[in-house]
Structures are given as C-alpha cells and as structure tokens.
Length: 482
Image (cartoon, rainbow, N blue to C red):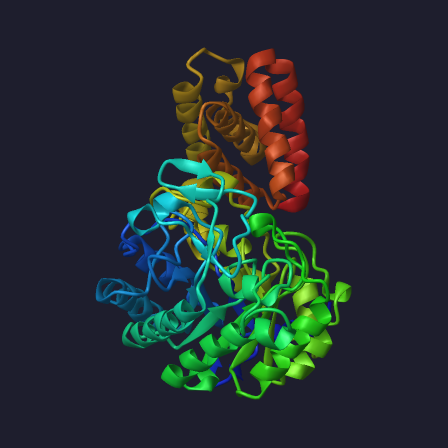
C-alpha cells in the first residue's frame, strides 16, 4: 500500500463542527469499570487520556437513565455526579490534544430486573424477551422479560435523552453520538422483528422510526445538529439475539433520509455482524450514506490496509477501531509506523481495575523498557537471565554456565529460557506483556516469539540438548532480524 494512501488516513479533517487531527476513531468499548452508581473512577481519566491521539474518541456506551442500564458497572450521564466525573475525563483528553464525544445509550429489553430501580422489568417497544446474556452484579444472566412501553411514556424517554445531552455539554464533551445500533432500544423500535406495536410508534416504517427521530431531534436541540452523530448496525444480531428487520435496506434507508434532513455531524455504521469480518458488500451502505448526506464513519473488521483503502476511495471519512484500542493505546502511531499490534486477552475486556485497562505499554514506553531492561550489554543480559532463571526455576541447569564468550545470541537464549520458565507460572496478561517485549527486541512477530519462548520453557523440562538447539536457532534469528 502506497505512502499516499497511508497519508490519507492520518490527515486532519472536520466531522460536522468537530475538527480532528486524523481519520482514526476510537469506537465505543464497554469496559465495565465504573461504580454501580454509574460514576466513573479516576482510572477512566488515565484510560481515555492514553488514547487521545485518536482523531475522535467515542466513549463507551453511557446510560441516559437508571432504566436504560443493562450491564453492571457501566457509566451514566443522568446526574450531576456523572457529569462531574466525566468532566475530568474530557479535560484530560483535551489537554492531550484529543476530541471526545459521549455515546448516549438505552438498552431497552437487553437488561435484568436486578439492574433496574426497585427490581422493575426492563422496557421495550413490545414484550419480547431478548436472548443472549447480560452482565449483572452477580455475574452473567439471561435478560429479564420486558414490558411494552405505554404510548404516554415515550415523551418522558425523549426527555431522558435531552437531559443526558445537556449534562454531556456540562461535562465538556465535543459532541454526542446517539446509540441506535446493536439491538438496543432505538434499534428495537426500528426493526419490525422487535416492534409489534399498533400505535403511532409501530407498524409502518414511518411509525417505527418516529421515536428514534424524536430522540435525535431533541439531542440536536441541545447541541446543534453539527455536533450530533448516530450509530446504526442494520446487519447485526449478536446482542440480544435480535432478529434482522424484514427489509433492512428500506427501513434504514428511510431512517437515514429523515436524519439527513437534520444536517447531523456524522453517520457511524457497523458494516456487518458485530465483532465479525467486515461485510460492507452485504448491504448497500453507500446508499445509506448518500441518503444521510453527511460524514460517514465506517466500522467493523477494519485493519490498516482496509482503512487506508476506504479513506482513499471515498468510501468513508473516518474509520473506527474497537478492540485494537484496548491493548494499543497508541494505535494511531502503530498504524502510522506499521508496527505490530498487541492483542489484549479477553480476560482484560470487562471489569476489574488497572490491569488490562490502563497498563498496556505504548511503543515509546516499550522502547524505554527495551533500553533499560533488554538492550543492555552482554554481561548485563547474562546476569539478568541467570537471576530470572534462578528465581523462576531454582534447579541448577547447565546453561547457567554461559559466559560472555557466548555472545548476545547466547545471552538472549538464557534470558528467553528464564522468561519461558516464568511464563509457565504467571498470568495470561503478564505472559503476553513479556512476550511482547521479547518480540520487540528480536524483531519477531508475537506468534514467533510465543513459539520461541514456549520452546525454551519446554527446554527447561527436557534438558540441555533442546536448549542448545534453541540457542542455535535464536542466534540465527537474531542475526537476520535484529
């Protein structure tokens, strides 16, 4: 891929009234690290600050009300305490030169009675139970049976969105994104598979789109349309096992046409099934974009090459990356330099504290670690390796007799052997961090480094002959890749 195409992904642009430094968007990522009251902890300040090099950050989905919550430990934006906590996040992002919008979220039927006030049933356009699982304080559970919203309750929901938009403005965000995707409340109203109403909010596509459009208009009245985006996922059934609409092209085409008349900042589309390969060709997303008329953010399964092609061809104005931002806070720089991406373990995604949240190293930090801990002279490497080996595997081993005559390859072999022994008894998260450092020093890919370290660890068990063979192979790898 040419440098010209690469440059397009990293050039500044404007999306509505929001000026951005590049075309890379951090997609919404639920991390479940807020309090049960929906107030974010100081960890969120560091988390978002670390990722401020994205052209635009879209926050994790954020509840507009207690009723709108479907997962434990997710943040809210419906009280002054929520706004105050988010203000620390937005200040940190802005100080780091970034832009950030908040995603406004109501889960509808994808909830559990224990997450609702006074154990109430979740609400939905129709009393159709969601499939899948939700994360409660007691662990994963099946969604509770919802009740159908009364017609006179819907204006109050519109006001909940308006209140959340107002508090988001007080919290210092650069804009808001209305979450109308992934089988949550607004998407449930749009789809005829989950909306069986017979009032003015059900039946025809015009009626099914009425509530989502009322919500977007209310939010735009607070912010101005050019600071409001909308997210859709016409082909996604993953959350709540939500069936597709009977005619997604027509339904979402009408929705886009109506939103297009409002002059919104952007349309954010999940192209295909959530968390699966990109499926931009499975629906006429270009027609949806044309009907909308404004800026278009493409999402789902994009890598560096696909992203550059999409921007250069005019398919999209920006590309959003989700999971890649979890383990790569400096994703923009890694994409720019074609550096390897660290794949964060699934165990780091949801819940917990700083580990798996704010502890992933950047390229610059990894370079500092290499300089301080890895890229030392042969004597220091040998000393480090022997010390690690003695701590991780106290049984004496012939390879500990290596001296400086073994050279850098031998020293690295010893260090790898020590790390391999350590990996056997450490956590998945720590293991991957060690492997990443080792891979970076040798210029190996993560799978290559994993295989090498596994071999060395195995060598501790089966004896010196295999270690000697591994050392010879490592010397070869070091000489060609270093």
